[in-house]
Image (cartoon, rainbow, N blue to C red; front, side, top):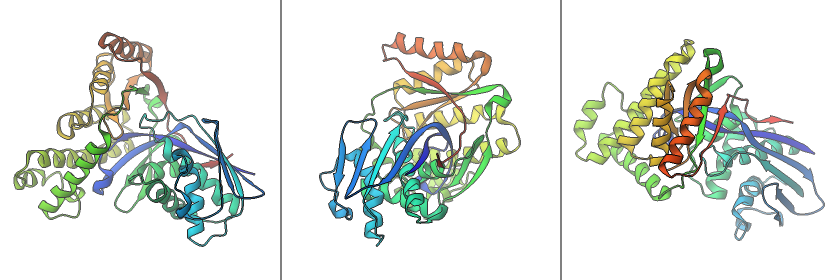
Amino acid sequence: MTRFFAPGRINLIGEHTDYNDGFVLPVALVQGCTATVEDAASGWAVTSAQTSDEVVVERGGLAGRDGVAEWATYVLGALWLLHDDGVDVPPLRIAVDSDVPTGAGLSSSAALVCSVVSALDAHLGLDLGPAGLLALSRRVENDAVGAPTGGMDQLVSLRGEAGHALFCDMRDLTSQAVPFDPAASGLALLVVDTRAPHRLVDGEYAARRSGCEEAAKRLGVPALRDVTADGLDDALAELNDDELRRYTRHVVTEDDRVLAVVDLLRAGRLDEIGPLLTASHVSMRDDFRITVPEVDLAVDALHEAGAIGARMTGGGFGGCVIGLVPVDELDAAQDAVRRAFADAGFGEPSLFTATAEAGARRL
């Protein structure tokens, strides 16, 4: 029997920069998924502590995925892909158990996939190595499940380090650990799961991705990452479409903010990153236009309660907000968010503090 844990994540800063070959700065969470792999007599069986179903399939490749429950494709995906790659995967039983809230933008799917892939790698003696684990995890979500994820979630779920954020270059998928310890600065990273229903996410996400690609094409660059902050004004002048200008401005300034936050963290000046987090939210709200009333309200309430910076985290149109809050004002800040939501007639949010944890590990 082999058991591995892989965490969910919070993205500290760097939204919608991943598919623009840009920079992101996620943090691995204490919440995550545990995958247990055991030998079986026949077939492949998967169970989840979050559902009463057991899914049993014959050993085979991706061609056999039709009709399988979606949650199970995240577990079986690695088995199907390994089979298609020529690996003789024996009969197995895989059990998963996750405490990452689904639909909150905390990457419950990457936690699930990375825990399974890590456990399979060890159980079967595949010796995939860091690059192989990342590649297989991404293929499960992209090819087996059909989710167009960019790789950030899998990177931090596999490679996160305790007490550090993970600075990721999404062009070459390299990563560097950067110190991130709010408590040492008298701060807490407060997470507000607004529980706002996602609105038109698929179409809106696709529109922004295609808009960014169109802007890069018109500017004659491989991706918007290649437009520098110094060259932004010239780039905006070349674009005659207001929507494309807004998208470009967000991506270029967001990349610049990620780099600035990384520099401050490396210099031990975590208490100075707040305005950059807030500026990121303003850019997502006004330029990229991916926020909703619940997340905007949460950000405003956190600021009024003393947060030094706050922003929506994740792809947008719902999900979570993060705020850097002085520890001695943490209770008041949580009360202020709950009060603001009640006054606005929104459902009660879920709040918790987050610390930077380690990535996938054997239990």
